[in-house]
Length: 330
Image 1: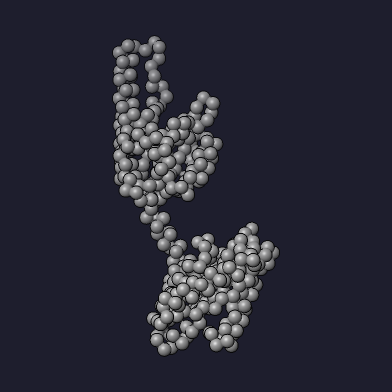
Image 2: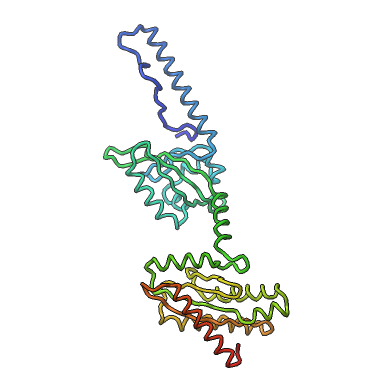
């Protein structure tokens, strides 16, 4: 198929253009020539529209799992020529799709198969650019052809690169949910996740509250830049002791809190030991600038208010701090 001229029938355009049986031959010939000119004009018009579109236009054959038409915009859009895209088989197309978006795409085409002609469905996903980078893409697709059994066989779609917009949204989300000094989640996000976990099903939920010892003294004697460095170091130590799914947050000047979904009382000793080992390892390698962090834990079961669990963890942290001071180690 010519990649610059899709198999889209633009139609004749108006009723009554076909000749009647008893028409004069000369008139019939004239009307046929006019029809051909009209169709040619519509073809050229459609071709120019597709060629100048800023978005990629394509036809996807769902049975063959192949792109059977694409306009030239695919070259700057995906980094592949139109000919390269048309030659891609199912494995090659699948390789372009980000693994985390595969399930969304499957659901998208299940829903698309239920649409009527003229109805449209949108989806945002990530595709691998020809240079190897992941680009965010917004696609809009509509049923184009159905098999005799009614099953959707081809879809007509357009695709737009929205990477810049998504990056801007991600940056805005990051700055609104993360602490600027440490890169950990901030208190508003911590509060939001606390409420979400309380409404959810991932119980038990364990909370750790931590406090950096001696920050005021560092600020007073060495200055606030040294205090900021202490906070950043403590944040990195705490972060290194937890899973990626745990919500590690800075909730105050020298205060940190961690939400651990699906973690119960029996796991607290192991978690505490891991955090203490991280602190000890840092202090052993930095004997001239040790970091002292006091921690406290509490666990909430389904039906308990997690804010109360945070307060329990905070009280235990304070108790541990007093105990440490009485022993002369804090």
